[in-house]
Amino acid sequence: MSREHVAVIGAGLTGSLLAAYLGRRGYRVDVYERRSDPRVTGAERGRSINLALSERGIDALRRIGLADQVLAGALPMHGRMVHPLDGEANFQPYSLAGDRAINSIGRGALNDALLDAAEQTAGVTVHFDHPLTGLDPETGTLGFADGTQAKADIVLGADGSGSAVRGLLLAYAGERFDETVSFLDYGYKELTIPARDGEFALDPGALHIWPRGTSMMIALPNPDRSFTGTLFWPMGGTGSFASLGSPAAVERHFRRHYPDLLELIPGLADDYRHNPVGLLGTVHCGPWQMLGRVALIGDAAHAIVPFYGQGANAAFEDVVELDRCLDATGDDWAAALPAYEKGRRENSEAIAAMALANFVEMRDKVADPLFKLGKSIEHT
Ligand code: FAD
Image (cartoon, rainbow, N blue to C red; front, side):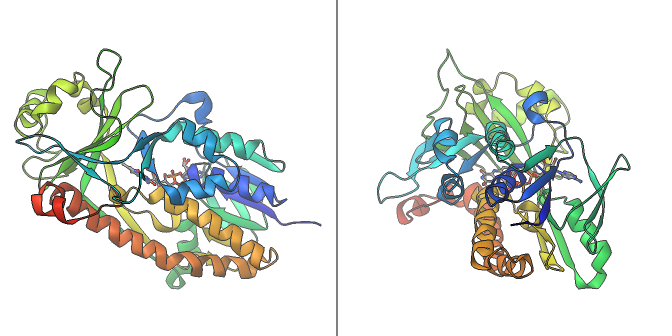
């Protein structure tokens, strides 16, 4: 049977997984990725080095036989370890029913595994160094930064929160397309807590949080026994990224607010100076599909702030839902794409709101003794 030719834009977590799923359905899939092959060049510095993968994401991997391989390199985190400014760290289990955990996993390793899986699937080709710059939704004509063109029957934008496909749909559809991107007035910066004498410097079975009211730091373990810490700080005002311009000011701030971290991060001044401040935003847009042939998926459709640790997990659920809709419609894309949007849109809005609410919980409420006693916690 002749199947449509599909173009996937972006070979991040969503695009790679999606290509593997579609290849298995028998489609010819061309994936166009802006960057060079990360398996050759390595990951970009300061770009969320690890992430928490939960059952929602693992389910998507399990369906194509990748879960065991990916989880072999993961570290289960059974709860939060909260580090107050004064007093002992305290552990808050995520689940009081059984031994459930979320898994700390390297973004690079996960992306590499998904890229390998995509490329090993018959019919899938990944084209690196191909930034998409143009799209005609009516003909499926794609334009790239180097002036080359390609064509596909179906175009799926998996190109992340700043999606070019989304921008091109907006340019095409005008008022028929809604887009809101709301940025938090907080940013993030990553810092490394290296291994000490070859061992983890903190308990690797927990996600660590230093809640400080209006800001916080978190840390997730890595297989090399380091932790990746992420500062979530205001962009402006006192105690913000903007206010701490010199290594001495950074050290003073840490001595006052994170004294235990000062000795755990020997490279603080260097990391702080060199690692970029990332922005945090929520994307709301719609419709997610047009003409039954162009659609958005993953962060391109619904980027969220990271405080629930669910952005990639939700993106993987999108892929499973689209696959399910193709099953249900006998691979009729004109029916499957609207069904996929219907199946996922409300859930995405819900997790976007919960992720914003969880920022307040993590940076503030987890330090409250009443909160600790009264709540069974199922998430970060
Ligand atoms: P991306 O990962 O952004 O990938 C998009 C890809 O498209 C990239 O490879 C990019 O190079 C490519 N691209 C972009 N533009 C173009 C173009 N014009 N042409 C071609 N290619 C293009 N999620 C979790 O589930 N758990 C967590 O613990 C977690 N922690 C996070 C912590 C931080 C600090 C941040 C910022 C995010 C976190 N997330 C987490 C969210 C998660 O990172 C995203 O949801 C996930 O990366 C989305 O994958 P994606 O493939 O849709 O987008």
